[in-house]
Amino acid sequence: MDLTQHISGLIITFNEEKNIQEVLECFDFCDEIIVVDSFSIDRTVEIALKNPKVKVIKNAFEDFTKQRNLALDSAKNDWVLFLDADERITRELEKEIRETISRPDAK
Image 1 (tube, rainbow, N blue to C red):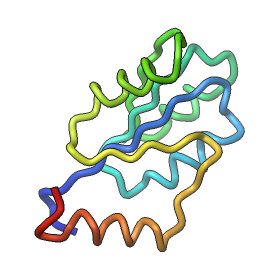
Image 2 (image 1 turned 90 degrees about the vertical axis):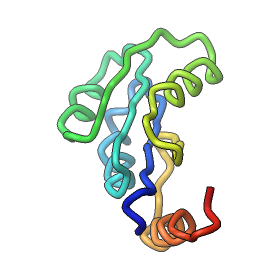
Image 3 (image 1 turned 180 degrees about the vertical axis):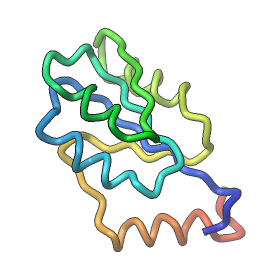
Image 4 (image 1 turned 60 degrees about the horizontal axis):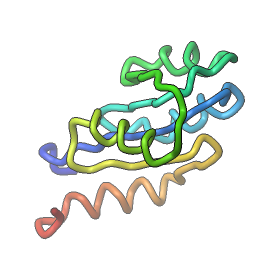
């Protein structure tokens, strides 16, 4: 992968302790991971913060658009990947993403 192409992994959460670890593992190829959490009352944030790449932003949920925009505004990279807590990336898809953003015509 071209080292000038970096990816931010973004996720919106609320009480996702059962899913958060697996989805974070899908983001292991991302340069940063931003979790926008709506003040979970389970272990979501605790689990997320065990990953050194994770930045947690706590924000009261008003609607998905505002949460997504907050995540996007917080991302430092041009390339972003949003996942829901119950979604997963296969290694094949990860490879395709890496190859796509490494192409000279990728913008």
